Amino acid sequence: MIKVMKTKYPLLLVMAAGILAFVAVLVFAGGAVRASERDDRVESSFKKTYVYNTYLKDEDIQISCKDGAVTLSGAVADETHKPMAQGVAGALPGVTSVDNRIIVRSEQHAKSPDTWISVKVKAALLYRRNVSGTKTKVYVKDGIVTLKGVAANQAQKDLTTVYAKNIAGVKGVQNEIVTSKGLETTGETRGEEIDDAPITAPVRGSLQARR
Image (cartoon, rainbow, N blue to C red; front, side, top):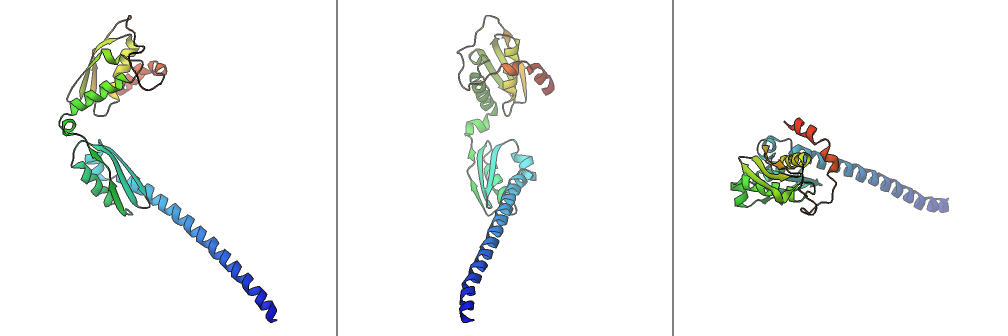
């Protein structure tokens, strides 16, 4: 009888240890899922706050959360928006810490948004193969972009408008570019190796939809 008890005792310990390990895995997995859901909720809640939608919506701010630790990144034009974003994130339920990596754009850009917009529009045109970036002049006043210069055809002119409208901060585009069939743009621009041809077909519809 004593020998039987000695044999079964270790077996029961092994079984009990196995059950406890299994339960621990379930608890850990459940906790990981809940933590992930909490992190997702923090990220979505940040962009639903009143402060974000009133003051920060137009800034380039990204938020990521892992196990309650928030990381803010991106750039803002107004220096007061950096601590404001941190305050909003830190006040959210479930947030344990905030690493604020947001950078403040230069004072020149902050004080001259039109200049900043002009730089971004020119860069966008230079890095597109199917528009004439070097033959397009860009003027900006109060967020309204005026384009002047020469384009090879109407489709290229329309594409220039689309690319300018896609720049953050642009309120409208006045395209005064004239077309010239003899103009060639191959080799003028550099940058992303994309085919803009599929864009030229629906470009007119896109412009109409934006008006």
